[in-house]
Length: 360
Image (cartoon, rainbow, N blue to C red):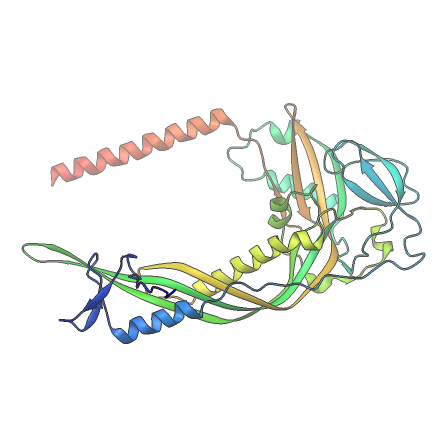
């Protein structure tokens, strides 16, 4: 059966036809006119677009015999968090839900981390960062910093997958320039539409994806970036004195999140090159990843749990750079007073402007 070809207007999506008077293609809906050469080039662009082709090579580094001696796994009976400690550890509290964990067995039968970034900031620095985090928060209850207490501060090595790849990408945009003018009878608006294409290659190195369901992805990503140049080959000695969570999200499952982060970064980088238009909308993105590689690493994070008014608040600090994040309570009465004051100030400004207009 023969295939049908219908040409759509790139501006409004309506069907367009050849106008014999103009010797051009013209849209009957928005009156946009197209040179035949321009439309042919646009049609070629559409036909050349390809689907994403994204593949990764999985890590295969394994523990060697005897290398896991002295390591024990603790499992939290409450949230199921799997934590790695040394053989001298008898009991501890879960850094995620603050409940006790119990020993369950040797740490074996799983992938060995390729890299680790050692902690560079201690517990004292984490506590100081929390106090600094309170500063300058005008809507923070005044008694919070005094009455809340730190339940626990724990250093945790969080498992992450690091993705390396070269991305060949092609992005097509619909852009427009809008011009307004008036004469004695009418107001005019002219909209000129453009089909803009960008293509090129980007290199991505060590894109991190959280490998633990117990560590919230947004919390982990909010303390990025980590300086990966400080990463060293993994040795069990780096775990001494800290907790180390084993991954429970494998590399295969993490690919979707890695692709999402790479796609977003690629689209942002390409969009920055599309300048000089009133509006720009990405219509299609095609990404082909080459030389994909995945590695397994442990990154240092300080987790702090505080309690106030019966509620728990969790904070996280990058154990390498000191970047600190976490939600704080809000004084609702203070917020209402602030909102009312802002509204009153805004209303006063409106009345003042209206009065001045009346005077003049």
